[in-house]
Image 1: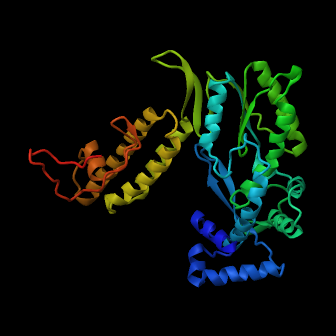
Image 2 (image 1 turned 180 degrees about the vertical axis):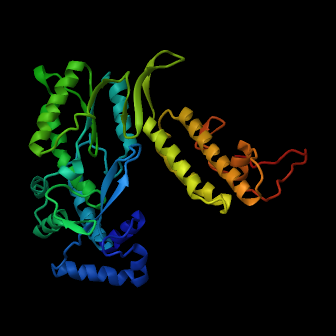
Image 3 (image 1 turned 30 degrees about the horizontal axis):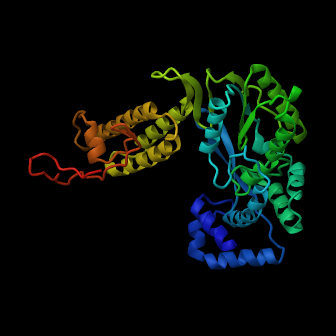
Length: 421
């Protein structure tokens, strides 16, 4: 079990904790000895988790705002992963179909398709867009442990979970003792967060789905701490919102009243990085659910590409910049490809070409001191290998190999020969 946990931790990557021992350091010292020490410590019941290192990362699309992360040591990550491998199937047997976040064989796209079907097939166009206030930091430890104890009786496993929750947080040289919350960044945190909100899922099926007079209150879809309720009328949406407040109060959770909205699908709303809206088709005039990258998602990818172009010095080879841009473009496009994103993909393509052109002109001035030069799109995509998200109407075309400096083959007719794709 520890060997499998190590494999998954290594595959996920991540930085070191308070002991400053990285994955490479452990591999250099010997993985077998590292796992043997963990096994012996667990068998002797002497395992104690280290304090969690607090780090802050900027929130995407929110200048000046940061998100706190808790970084356990690699040893604690391996033990948490081993416990997760055992506990996750047990909790999965109870989790409901309306929950999609951080679960095996479920994704954000599945949640979005569920929302699309609820709007299109069931006519639920009034949307309650929920936002929980500091969810991961506000989970009460005692109630979370009670939720775990309903399915887990092993005292040593319960003791491990309790110690992880109570482990100190090192921030600016001072250790703080947490009274609530499960740190974002821990291996077991997503499972525990899902387990705690499972009570809301189950209570919604018991109480929230059947409202006054036997009418359905709404269709509940949740991804981790983000959730929406799809309703048929505005009155039904208001009742659903009141019902959710009554379900969250006993759990010690609160809604962010400033971000929680009640909107009609014609106005549109953002969920999991997508913007969803009920719009008529230009060709048939029939309404459908348009889901495309949100403005924040577009702003984030533009800023990320801009930062890549700024951080690569002009003395580097162009392939270094192209490789960084392609990784960001491919990951972003693979996530947003299931929606209606062709127009936005073209805008991102144009922005990526602009950043490469600016970088090449800086490189030219640094190298020869000459003026600006034009770089056509064919040169950027065909010669340098820049990934093009939209090419001949097909989204996410694969980058062509970098052929800079290579002679281009000529066909018998004198035209450039290209491989058949």
